Amino acid sequence: MNMKTRVSNRLRGLKIVFMLVSFVVIAAAAHPVFAAGSEREKIVAPFDYPASLPLNAEVKLIQKIGSYTQYRVDFDSTNGERLPAFFYLPSAKKAPYPCIIVQHGYGGDKNMGGSFAPFYAQKGFAAISIDIEYHGDRKQAGKDVLSIDIDDDARALKQTVIDLKRTVDYLYSRGD
Image (cartoon, rainbow, N blue to C red; front, side, top):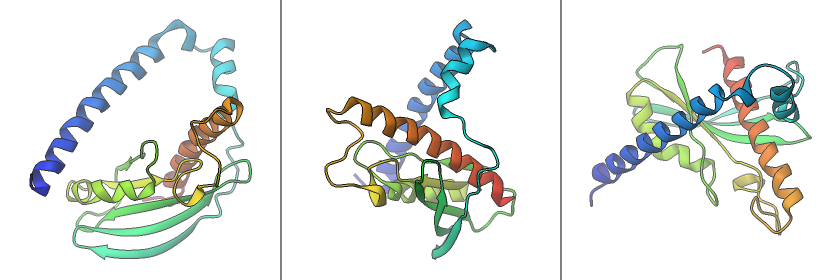
């Protein structure tokens, strides 16, 4: 199977997953439990942090490849965490860029964004991919997001949700 066919098959699968996830999110948002009020606040509160929390972002050029430029970005999350990411900007388009967060699966890392960056860049999209807790540059010996330590698993998954919110904060801070 050639590369173009594999990418096409992967994108078709991603479209299906995206549609299913979108349906679940929309259905959940419409559910009375998520209506404004105290119940919603109980669910959302653990993921809140001060909006003024500084990012202290560091951006380093990695490479320019045809349709995009790749950067290494590191910025502050919460709980003393430093968040590593790869950020891809399309070469042929001008700002502002719509941006897609490419999140790796279990056992992966931020390098996954590079698999999709050429396709997104050709369409004029920027892309960013982070390492979730205990993956990639954040790997820690003996630690895993899915382990027998349920309390640490819950903490790591909560941190990942916050990290994704901080990724959106970083994107807004760029202005492009």
